[in-house]
Image (cartoon, rainbow, N blue to C red; front, side):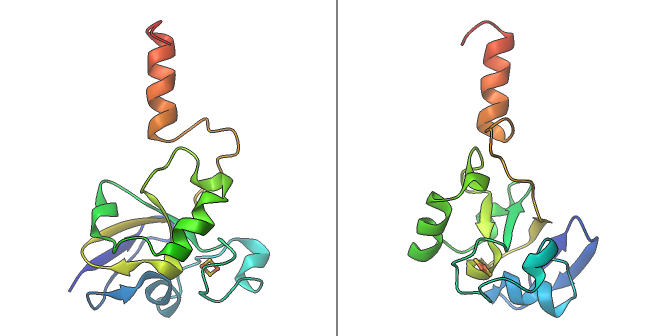
Length: 129
Ligand code: FES
């Protein structure tokens, strides 16, 4: 059974392979939604983006592939900038292996963090940009 570690809340649980990440979080009382989104969300329909999580330390490979709905929602979101495959919608993620999950990751409006942004900063420091 895969282990899911929620980094912000410090909760670590085991779940069935293929379990829905949102359901795993809610069942274990993990604060998946920020602020008012705890009540005002789309309840797992992949529309609001409030359940976004960042999969850490290479564990994004343990998530099932993005659904078309998730790809479309992420394409319209600032919070996805600079995060590639690591930013996901918990309601659309199938847990296929061990995962480390950052709940409520910050919004990246400016694109100033994430792997791509860090690489750009490094190139700038090295005078290669
Ligand atoms: S709960 Fe709304 S997108 Fe996941």
